[in-house]
Amino acid sequence: MSLFRLAAFCDGAVGGNPAGVQIDDALPDAATMQRIAADVGYSETAFAAPLPDGRWRVRYFAPESEVPFCGHATIALGAALARLHGDGEFALQLNDAAIAVRGRRDGDQFAASLRSPPTRSAPLPAARIDALLALFGLDPTRLDPALPPSLMHAGADHALLMLRDRATLAAMDYDFDAGRTLMRSHGWVTVALAWAESPRLFHVRNAFASGGVHEDPATGAAAAAFGGLLRSRGWPHGGAIELRQGVDMGVPSRLHVAIDDVPGAPVTVSGRVRALD
Image (tube, rainbow, N blue to C red):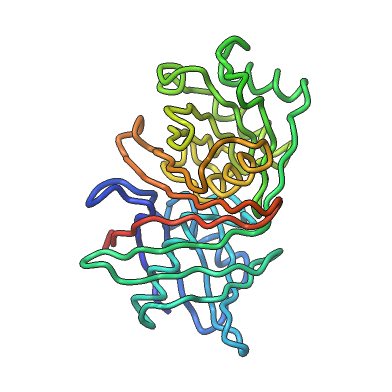
């Protein structure tokens, strides 16, 4: 067994979202993985074991629950596999999707990229918008009409509120217990609040009460879903965007998303990884 502690989507030598990565000959039972994830204490821990066909079986656990897909833990897993097996692409079998991650050593750090599950999106119903506005204490006038509130998916469901200004994003706060109840009732893994500095540069914060974490400093699964949403809405993304997340937490993170023109297709999310132990 190898247990790694890594920060994915770091900004140079700082920041990034900590993830646990445990690599075994076979996956432990679910209760054991849940206990290990709680002990590690990061927003997610990825568990991986080799399959006979050369792929890797992967499951993700937050401190309080299993999640179907986690982007930053997948990026961390790509770095861990590159560390153990050398640079390359690794095929992953998740609970509900087959994806791939590529990892490579880059000096004293690693770089990794994942090809997400297929993407889809839909407008949020008015009642759910009202519930989110109430949760975050927002007036409807603080929303950016250029990209209305949405449900977005790339292996997991996320809700999105686009804001008009950076100051409103910086002031994000919410009642944790109410947020957990709301997110779990609708199956949202996170709720993303975002502000567009330009058509290709976004500042993002992600509430992750569904997994037992108040805020996630870098959310690769939501970044993938966001890339798919922008494509479906005809946003002028120019083929790639950058997300800056975690800044308001003092944990600066950078996520890069490459977007092709095929509706519903996967997108590629990439970033740098640094070791925490």
